[in-house]
Image 1 (cartoon, rainbow, N blue to C red):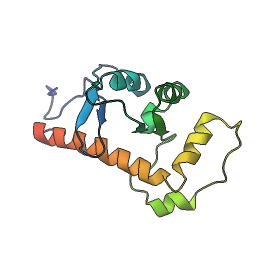
Image 2 (cartoon, rainbow, N blue to C red):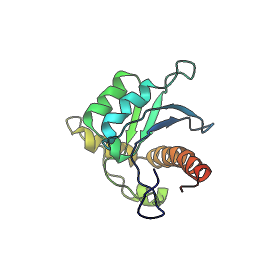
Image 3 (cartoon, rainbow, N blue to C red):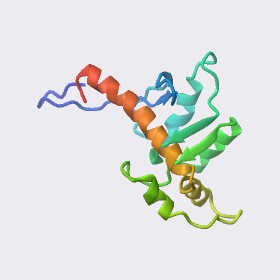
Image 4 (spheres, rainbow, N blue to C red):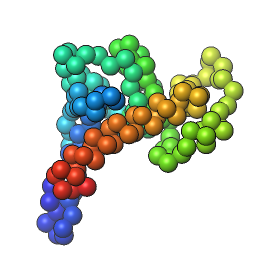
Length: 148
């Protein structure tokens, strides 16, 4: 929404999207005037058309991280990959791999297990693919609207 006091814009709505990593097409979205990202994951997944089909995996940023969301994804048969903290969008795979810890014990908390998953050899590819999928779709929309 246009800000009446200057030439900027105020974000009054949050529109999480689910985008396909290959086609970059939006498969589902939700709309809210709340900023609580964890609560938006499930409505966004529910918005994916049955024609598009159920995703087999989901790569989400740390704004969506919660034990409840990881459990909900697993219950739907979706392999979750959620960052557990504000990871840099500019870290190279080599930087991630240099931090690879030992595999955590089975009784470790979900946040430690998820952090480990994203620090395995496969982790950087999952995270980088996820951020370039959604971020590029949102960037294209913003550019088209003249706000980004």
